[in-house]
Length: 268
Image 1 (cartoon, rainbow, N blue to C red):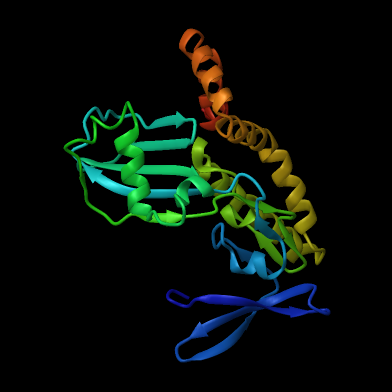
Image 2 (image 1 turned 30 degrees about the vertical axis):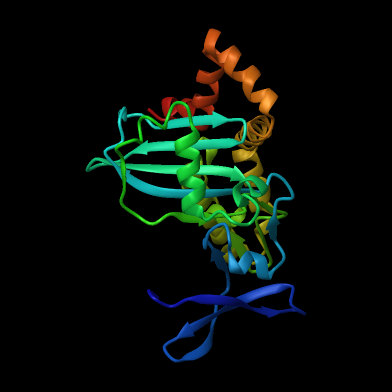
């Protein structure tokens, strides 16, 4: 139902089973019953949180600050990831001379003593970056800065009786490797398959969904978390940069894993 916000779950069996959702419908609050609810409402899923399935990761506590720019120099058809000792900056070309820029920083660094705004954090990161400052000298910001964080969300399960999670609602690691579409599309398929099994058998499918997601994504999760830990270590970033400058194979391998290159080749 477009334009109808979902703000909670309807429970039964002492609160352990989800039997529907609560929605804002016109001027009243009402319940919508369902045999199965699939929550695909993002990394801040109200439904997953209401059932105690997700929480903010203890570490790292990174925030993202992003905006669109025009007239950025040196932009090609490739996306860029600039890893620094205090975080990273993504630069992605879009149609119409637009460039999407996102700066990710640790919480304490991002706050700058609780005084810096998201716009100030983004501007400072670009101005202080030795490779990006000149390229953004004549660039023009054409959208407000959007802030998002803490980024990482851990999920203890992909659902509970009556509720299945899909997309970022089932956990969010880090945007650094650009895995979102893969997790969203394949995660949605897995949730749909689990829902069909539950409707056919009457057996709650959330445990099997968790197992299927682990089998499907565990390798990518390990790579993503390893990169997340690497970026959190200034010394690790320096060593990785020195190695990559002389031996490109590890970087190519990581790009292939993040981009599901092997999967695409097998699907041809």
